Image (cartoon, rainbow, N blue to C red; front, side, top):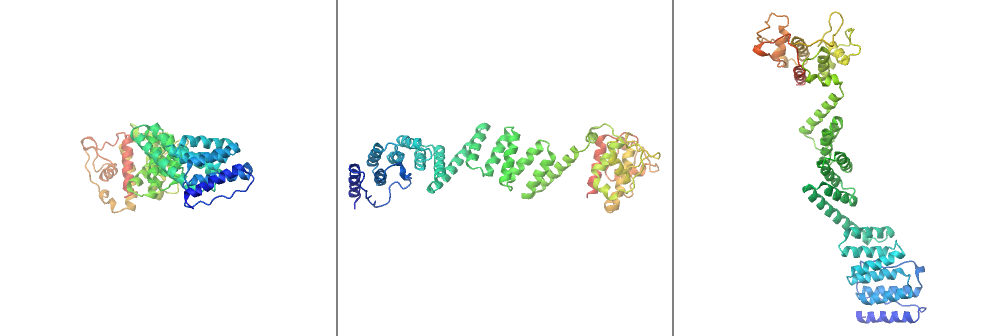
Length: 452
């Protein structure tokens, strides 16, 4: 049967149905592929209309699939005239309008069907098609998703939804990056959030949004989104680094160390390892008493401060060498540095006085520091005899301390090992008060020497 004779048969059938609705209809068999295979057939509950109305409606849909949209228009209009509440025919009119490329008329008819049944999947799908043709992909995506929710069996729509989601995400990402490059942080943030709404499992979107927020000064939001990125993709080094840098900038040393450790686990490097150590040291420093944290800035220091410096920075060395028996000292009650005083006296690095006092508030002179340094060097020499060769038989010359002086050996060892240095005129100045910076520098050098 030719297309023209097939169409004529359908029109004759429509006339016959109109003349005698009670007679059963025999639908024509279409030849060839349907012209609008993507259109969703506007079916519905049988109780919506009589069998005759349903037959006329289906015959009209067959006419539409031949490509004759105007004939289909007339057929669906006739069906609605006979059954005004039959919303599948309104959807049919919407599809006929789509076939004629009249999107405004199509939207009006789909809305008419949806007014009768908000969850009518064929009308929702048709509305999505009309919106897509009208250049409104976001609204089309919503309509297609609503159609799928109403009828999960419309599997052909799933690929449309996926494509639109991807396309929408790409457009939002492009807009977000352009806005970020232009310094329009709020616009970039809005576009990234829209992209995330469409693709909530894409870790890089959270990371890029975090970078924008950090640059704009919103560190709290940046941290939240960077951590979401890392949760979605634990191997995202850039997100992990972003977290670490922001934690460091906030002075959250322990959390920054943990974040850098996560970076190191994925992509090891000496630089990151150094950052971990630095953060751990700062975290440890922050946990120390305020009296300790002010030592380096002090113009002079006392014996408690020197004991604390030695106890903290030489902790491993002291732990390996200290005696289990503690000296009796009667003046440590209430002293903030008591734990470190006990540890350095047990190790023999500092000594209590003959009257069983430590005198925590007593001043530290260069001779006191030299004696402590010399004792630490003795411990290091025991563990590293080759390293100790340079200070084993020291003979530096000082203008104010001769080799026969009681304190010459300690001063000479401290200088020969590079831990302390002479002062003006190559003198040692045994009684000169020690500054916090000088003591910290000496103890740091001892710590480095002990680890070589």
